[in-house]
Length: 227
Length: 410
Image (cartoon, rainbow over all chains, first blue to last red; front, side, top):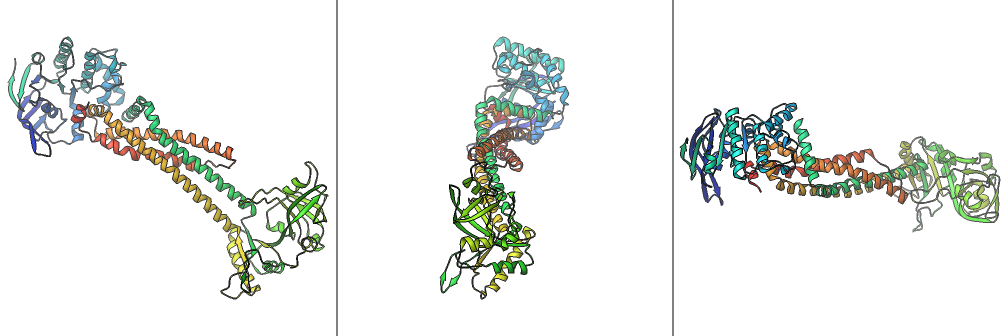
């Protein structure tokens, strides 16, 4: 599903005088249907890696094959199309559109995709039902609890039936009980729908709920373990 | 389709979320469009009324008036000399092929009395051919005829103002005897009301009598046979230029004006006058429209300003949309649509206000107004274009955002 070879990302700060190496050659393979977590301290490069894996960003060097296709050098619009078709995102701060109903939030990726319009509402309802939010279609984000908002966000990531879901600290803004619920939901989606799931977290408890833990430090993978 | 629908809905929602701000943003465009429409309506109304007034004089009429003469080095002003004669008029009629009818006028101010009333007005002597040249119908009674001209009959045709000044309301002026400088005249006709000329002269304040009668019995001038004005009509307004040339050549010849010396008369066609005043009012209309357009432009800048604020405020929303697969053109479209919705809504509101303002101005100032569909359409299209033009910059800024940076924006 995911294959990277010697992936590197450098940022130039202060008029090119200071060069920051966020990633220093990451070689990684994640198979279809895996449930993987990436852990590491802040600044270890895990978010940079996730951005590149999610085609939000391009590597400075190295190769990235997603589903067998070389995607490292695609332009912005091609990456947008790829994200829409194959990747779902779940963020720490939910990132739902304010003053927009749950149903419309979930429909959003479909608006920019190829699915025929009459199917949009039905598919969004289905995705909401899959995360246990049937009946909450008309609610606005500010009428939902944090856990519910994250469920809506997961439904939004799910609605295009992507091969890959990337979750960046999905439980970072939630209490422990809700965190466990959300992780259980993600696990279930992984098991039932066969979607490849990559979770970034700095909490060992959360990482322990995944099948494989990749540890990063200073822009490189230092440990890749299956607990 | 869904995209357009969604884009429109998103635009509408974004504008409604900050309703006060949206309305204030629109205000510039509203005022601009309203000003353009009101100004153009008033300007075109003025155009139309000038045209109507001049047309009432007849656009196929050419006026010949005595001009400056140089007699022993002393130059008198226009109309000050008696250089035009009845014989000149007859010669024009006979020798200028582009002319269809000729008449002449001798005018002087005189005191008129009837019963206890008296009034100072213009006494105009003209032959019956006056009705051939001027398109001025007789409302009641009749105009005098050739036999009355030949016999210098003491008959008069009155303008509407004279009827109002000398007669009590309801009294029939036909058959009454009025006195002009003591000379009794029988009223045989009343002219239709003509109103003011565009230069503010009351055309109805006149008494017309046969030319011979005026010359011999009332005005008693020492220059018999001279006239104040020769009026010539041509078959169509287009012949006026040719007729003017023919008249000028003939009169220079008759007055033995040496080549190189100024004419001792002035030929002026109504067509020229018409064109000149039309041009003046059109220039005025355009000037007003141009000034009003500036406020439309200012309105556009207001829209741009607010959209830039909106792009900053909604950076995270843009990031979310980019993350789930929106391409930069989708984001561009969304902000452009918002700009156009704002400016077009402002344009519609401005149209309503502008039409209302034009009507109110027309009623209060008693000016004629002319609502021009072309001007309204143009103002609307222009307001939409303003939105497009000033929406491009903020929309491009939104569309160029990096999704990672946008998602991180607080």
